[in-house]
View: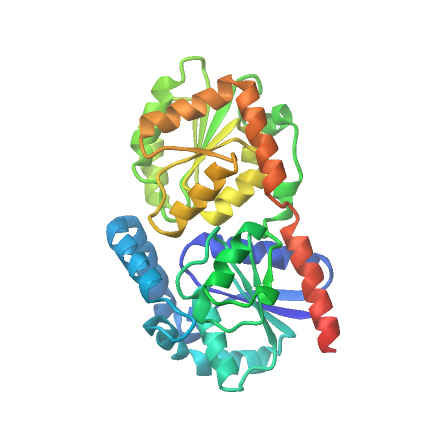
Length: 373
């Protein structure tokens, strides 16, 4: 079975979900690979689209919120938006790529490729089944104008929202958001701390910056450090943000209890090693944390879909949240000090978060290919 996973370089969540599915499929002996659709138009286009989106979200969140709200108002299943027509410009390049690669099924983790695939289907230029893998706990604007064959949702609770937007219920499959297999394999906390180079006897806080930032992470980390009066440890994962990593290492140089990490493929290990995670409510990062069952404190969301992600997690008891840094830190310390409170949150995560979404989706894709044959 050959599975093409089309993504777009606008934040790492979409890519990580695609990689988790790719990991599962390839482990079963299939051929699965990811392709940034914008790269088909050249490196410059990919950088422009990805950089423009991430820059807007990081540096002008208010403007992004206005655009998101405007999208909600004009989004409709009855007509196509400018977003759709912009993505049809890549239809020829995507069609040529598909003809060369000859996948059996196409999965997309992003709206933009879904729009392009919809265009090809409407023109009768696409024979393969198309599967959308959504990565937020809401129906973001413009999903309803796409015409793919199936939509993988994070939760059953999202089905009604998608139906109300005009997507047929029989297309909606609430398998969950795929996460890497490592997040489903718990490691004993003491051993995880040793493996991560931490003091095995002392609680640890994990701060995840995310691919699109965390706000004033240096200020937050300093406030948290000052509250850690019992020798608690702090781990800050900066990802690909080299500038942030450099700033934080300079700020906390000589403070052995603060560990500043750049890009790492051991996020799962650090979640096992730590007692609480501070993270903004991105769909993928929040799902990874909940699958790992580490107590979550959500920081201020990017206005739009992350606001709704946060609302869902809070309503299910899977996280605590505040817009104020002082309250976020107070929540984190309470989760460390109050074992019963942390236990209740882990139970809520276990109840509401499907851990094996990648496996269920891989099963479905295998069945889909068998029916096509």
